[in-house]
Image 1 (spheres, rainbow, N blue to C red):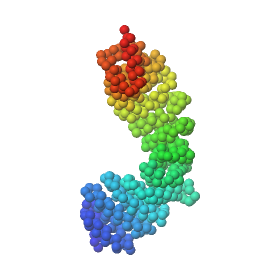
Image 2 (image 1 turned 120 degrees about the vertical axis):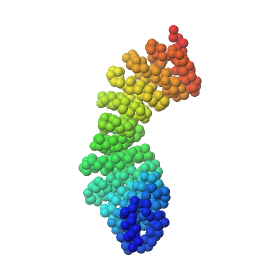
Image 3 (image 1 turned 90 degrees about the vertical axis):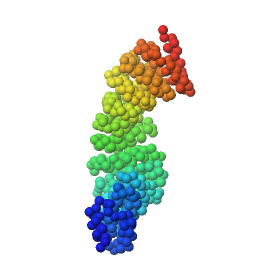
Image 4 (image 1 turned 30 degrees about the horizontal axis):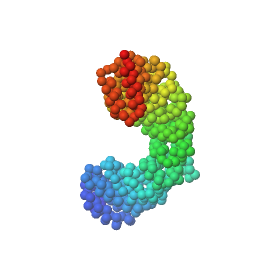
Length: 501
């Protein structure tokens, strides 16, 4: 038979053998004959899918044909476990190739039959079907509202059935739960749209289930890193959408995230997401920030910075989270006592080339140092770290604004701090800021303020009396003529210079 010959050729080829029109003819002829012959259906599917190859210029047409034929086979044998597994494998392969080639395909036609087969066959294909749906969702095709709702309800039921915490009596299946959590993460890839389509009732069911599973893994099922990772992805995407943050808080999201981070201290992906969630939750209310602090959230972030000091993504989120959690003097004192300043300095040094880490670390240092004892600041390398950051990011206005803002605050401190600013060469950074960021009022204002606060010191006057400095000051004032503060600070500085002997 022709199909047997083509099947043998397909098993030996590299996917380039059969032309598209040949496969279309095969699909049309096979469909009319394979209803009673599962072997023919399986072989035909293999032939078509084996021919889907990203190296072909018409790959999208091959992929679309493969998905169409996969859907027909799945629908024809809805209760045949073997055929369903083959169909799922075929759809996953096509989806993976499509993702690699950045090709978008309509996944609706094949996804719905997979969900139907999952309902009929249950536990026998749950893992295969969820893995396949996850792969299909990776192609970023926008499902119709009714399809998204059906997918969500079906995934909730499947995950709950295998969670070990439902009334179904079934034991915990970590592989199925992991795949389900991955699907949830993709469902909320566009969180605002998903919440609007699903409605808060369905979203609440997902959040409650995700957090229940995180707690279940912490309490009795052991550590399952991928469950935490995908679960954190869901929470991360829903933190700032409508009332979802309230649901996360209501179902114990803060403790779940902190304990999940603690249990997975060596997992950079989980740590990055955990810090991001804590930062997003803390952004709403002071009491939430305090709850995070009281739940050992600061410890989790600091441990994160020690363990993953070389990981840029983790450190960026950790610095940002730390700056949000510096809510009161007691917390700031605790962070300093736990080595928070040293960890931030270390992060800035290791990632000196990352402007984002410099910005986030400077934000945290600004808050930590606001009421820190001067001796603590003098025994640290904070001024040197700030200067290095300013030197390495001279063109980045956000870094300049943050760094100079801290130095401005320090310039109001005692004589020892002022001397440290002066001796470290930070006044040169003020001069460079006037040259490079003339039209950025916040940068100019901080530079002017530092010069004014240190004006009576000899080194400061030497810098200000250099050739061209007055022109720089006037130029900065003219560039920011609409800023009343800039004009006031500039005039004060010029008046002080006029009175200099």
